[in-house]
Amino acid sequence: MFKRILAFLAALSLAAACAPAAAETAKNIYASDFSSGTDGWYGRGAQVALTGEGTLKTTGRTSDWNSPGRNFNMIEGALYEISAEVRQDTEGSVPFMISIAHSVFGAESYENLAHGNAKKGEWTKLKGVYTAGAYDQYVLYVETTGNPSLEFEIRNFTVTAPKGEPEAKATEPPMEIQAAENVPSLKEIYREQFDFGAAAPSFAFRIPQCVELIKAQFNILTPENEMKPDAILDLQASKALLQETGDETAAAVHFDSAKALLDFANENEIKVHGHVLVWHSQTPEQFFHESYDAGKPLVTREVMLGRLENYIKGIMEYLDENYPGVVVSWDVLNEAIDDGPGKLRQSNWLTVIGEDYPNRAYELARKYAPVGTKLYYNDYNTAEPAKLKGIVNLLNSLIADGNIDGYGFQMHHAASYPSMGQITNAVETIAALGIRLRVSELDVTVGNNSESSFTQQAKYYADVMKLLIAHSDQFEAVQVWGLMDPMSWRAKNYPLLFDGKGNPKPAFWAVADPYSVE
Image (tube, rainbow, N blue to C red; front, side, top):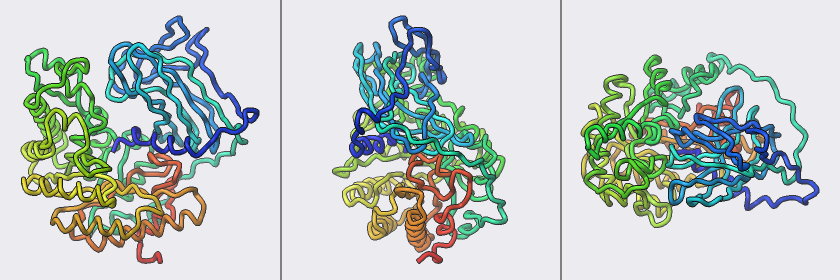
């Protein structure tokens, strides 16, 4: 799942729980003032310039994250209120986000802090909160969703600490990852049962600690965002191809974002699980419209099926030619079932193609995927009864067509929920369908980094692993979603097996030997 988009839910929950302190304790950290210059703002993959009206305009964008950005000094543990006004004069209504890129020892991760829809020609205020984590750099920026080339303006960007800022904490120098001989290898421990892997962003392959960690521990990788539709679909090339041929079904792809991971996997004989071909999120809005123009009507079912076929064909042909045998499996479809009624969620795919769009996607993936590539459906909240029922209904339809191989469990859990009884029921229910299984996205959050919280987390991880081992004849792989806590989309809740210095946590030892945990 695109974790940068979902992370704003945590921010909204925090906003409801944290009332501002008395006014006299508030500290105004920053308020934008473009009267004499850009005030430290710079273009992140784009160009920014003053308008002369107290606003900053961003142009030259080709991706949603291309944005105006600015570095801020923040104190770990401090609560910040962040707001900005945005305006665009192109589309009827455009989703915007205030986001933060934070890094520690060079490893960058992201959170979305505020959401809002800006109507054409109107200034719209975005407002959210952020509790600063343990990072050494913080960059706030304003981005779009599904409108990668949109030009827009910002003004009145403010950052306030409503409770005042605490004293800055002294940071410890980074420690090297422990030597491989001192830490057992998860891929070796589980080699006879299933692959053990992780999700990794492209920047991880520039960080020696991450590289050594991956080599030592994992034999399968999933790209975090680099093989999602908005990263692979080449909108400009697709438009050019359409203009050249007049064929509305034309679709072009590129793998610029994914090459670091693919090259690394190829050189080190590590498998790759592709994520994801068809998703309601992180798919450019233009993909569904005539002439790849979001301002024009939606295309017909026939055109969309043609675009989908050319898109999938292009992906499979490129990988087979340039990285043969590296990508061993795919999430063909991701999160298609609604959380409430357990039916297909509303999406452009459902609107344009219809209720059989999942079946058509798997049909095309099977047609073009190299022989032996396993095709999965991937979803979260599988332990919820209504969601589980909807997932089973969808799987039964796809199994009947003969084009699906398995199901991927997104186990983004907390150490207190869902219960092992619920997880066991979900695993056993889907295992009974006779398909292959994988844990595609595993992490377990806790409230803080205390010894008691980490003990609880370790117990939860151990119980999950015992269940998976009991069904290891059907599981292909188990993959944690991230390498180290600060790199996780749920970083503030310490969800992973390694801390920010690459050192194993109690959760790691529980996964390495779950039967040692009572």
